[in-house]
Image (cartoon, rainbow, N blue to C red; front, side, top):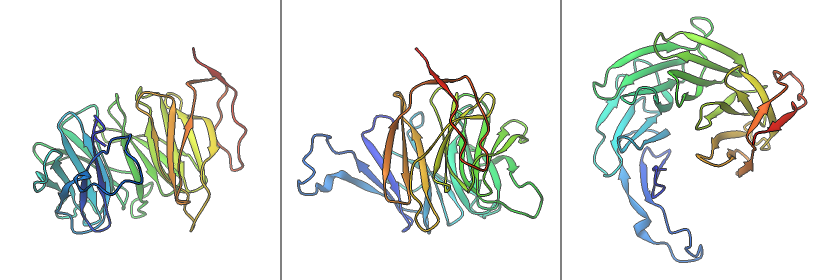
Length: 281
């Protein structure tokens, strides 16, 4: 979604990106379809589009695709892409993309082989390459990459149940933790950069204190379907709500109060008891 909420963008397995005008919220859902809702199509990818990110600062859209490329678009038009990254597939096939909050000219992309690349959107050059694999030659897929909203840190959700933290300046791994009982599929950081939320195919959503990397809350959110569960999680930009989408075809939202952990513990192999939480004023 755009920052104003007036436009939305969707990527499909057909390789296209559709641009939408958000309908009036008071519209009758049983009214006939209004063709003006579809604003246009962005074409250029030749395979499924896996990720989209909107930049309110630049009025730009980033996309990553199974065709191996990351593309930069003008979000206000349906013109061809402004830039193409990883065109030669040197780093692999991208799985996720995000804007680097601490450096507005940079983007970060994760790849299915465990590589991470920081690119300069102006020069189109690779600035830094990072690797999340524990051992060379044993690639582990990254399902989601996320830039911390205030710090030069990249966070990744791994197929091997880990969440990892990287320094954007040195490219070094600064922290790694086993976060779930199954693949970690999704990540979100609250707007203040204090809490991390993770979703997994183990059916759970977990909230983490980013300062000490401890789990402060866990709850079951979606049922499994075809060995998959949670596909995405998100924080509301200003209110105490979180949302999730799952393989059970449901999208859910939940009110989560601002919390201060008085007792924290790392998740164990069994479902851990929730720590006692105190509401903040």
